[in-house]
Image 1 (tube, rainbow, N blue to C red):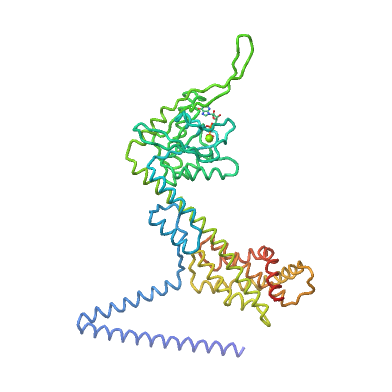
Image 2: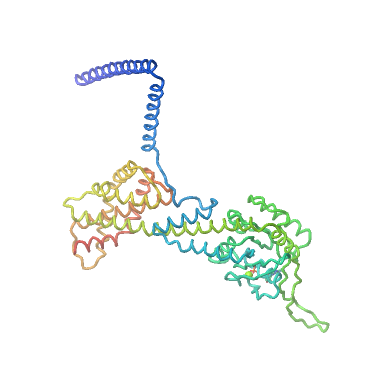
Length: 496
Ligand SMILES: Nc1nc2c(ncn2[C@@H]2O[C@H](COP(=O)(O)OP(=O)(O)O)[C@@H](O)[C@H]2O)c(=O)[nH]1
Ligand SMILES: [Mg+2]
């Protein structure tokens, strides 16, 4: 054990040396610091303050540099919460920025144009909203008897948005909007209805019993858009007055539960009327089914609406405007998501193609040159930028090297998948090993890009460990998905 002893002695000497140097350095530093301090004190105060100022500045600069290096940055250009109140300037600026980036902003713009058209009309917009067959159309018919409103016993007769004009107490023109019932099949009509409700000044939420879960959810969605709501319990003729009173109480409680504030006079019980089939029995014993009009009783609703509109219209208009800006922002966010999907596909394809070409050209290719090299870095940078993540260069390096260590394990599988994929091309004899390798590398790139998109769209930033794990978890699935396409790229290249 001579060597062992030798090493221990060497370490002991090294430790001793380090201590001596450290003590010397400490002495030297404190001596010169005291020296400088004494001289500064003796000198003019301006020099002292100036000196201390410069020292502080250096400390701040050092802190800033460390922060830049260590703390992850995240820029949220389009990721800003949709629910935040927006000004006209905000939304217009966002649309402009998105348009410049190549996003299709037509739907967001159409929302703003629609708002302008409505505002120039100067009418108050009331939207009848609620589940199918609660009697929305019947209520409009009761308010505007001369209107040609479609009412259906089966339900779901209103399949688009219709407008009817109505005159309030003060003689003001009011636009009543009939929309499809929510909760039908598909859900597409529901979203048409919800969007239209968000574009109105006041929503008349029509129900015909206690609120269901979907109804509560749509009320929550409307409250998120700061919509004034009048809750209308229709078909009151079906309840006794006690039943009606307890239902009304329940409705108020439900609204309370979702955190909405609704005044007592904003919950009303009415009977829209409508038609009903009745069996008429005659003296001679014969029976006949006749269609009768139910008497309507909507006085409380008319009062509630008039009270709502008797005040200043400007706050209502302002709230509506904000809601539409929010709606436009939501449209924009959808368009941006769509754009990101398309653009990321392009980025991944082009990186994969380059990886395949690079591997074909190399005499002894290796994934490390590819993954951690130029192609891997560019692809990662481009995808991060697309998803609004601004990782440090260090993070990108770390992510790629972590992925690299997983590539080693995935390579045999990737080669097998590539070999199999190439067999799918008819008329191809045995392909050279180089082509199989090239396809395998392409597949790895493809998988790397796709898993990166998954984490970026979910987290909005690049956390190396998380992204690398995602890559590992999804690799076999991604390999299978891309093999035909990438094999084709390799074969075209090789033939060319
Ligand atoms: N009992 C009763 N039935 C009503 C009342 N209002 C509407 N209805 C019936 O409810 C059904 C659906 O009405 P409709 O107005 O088409 O509902 P919408 O889908 O919400 O537009 C029809 O059969 C109406 O006759 C009401 O006040 N009382
Ligand atoms: Mg209807």
